[in-house]
Length: 233
Figure (cartoon, rainbow, N blue to C red):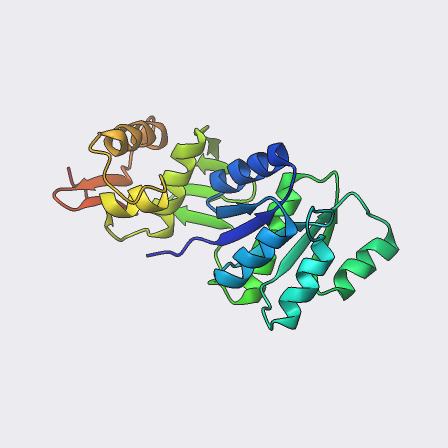
């Protein structure tokens, strides 16, 4: 099973934090949120994260103080600092405080995502390909695009996450439980046909107008995406 990256967002602007959490979730990254420096310090000390995304100006404890204290406690989780203070001296101060990267506001989320993924790999998280291919089907994680035989296939965010997870596990059976936990973030069975509906829609989009089926249902087990000419229904 592929382990998803987990990050902590330390941001006192609740609207900005909600936007980031949603964007990261759509990119397949799990996130927790702390709204002040003290809460961020506690959560980062008590939980394992791949990356911390820390706003510099925070109530109760500022971002640089949070990072300095983490390093003093010998916690070396990679930290990306977000700040409206973007001058060279500000960036140098942030990096010298123990930050691993520094991104001035305003920023493009695609750049933020790329930097977070780089820091996650630096920590030693399993390196993930940016592009997945199964046969003539291609999924680009950074561009958030899907193509088959060069033709772009528009997907909804949940459909994209579903296809991404299937392609990460290409050639292997993916169970309903695995999909519920890794695509829907459910740790219980909602007793609905939500998975079947989304798989049916996804299959229609990636196989319509194409000769070779890729996504099949494995009876009594789950689903599999695979590059061959065998069909299982």
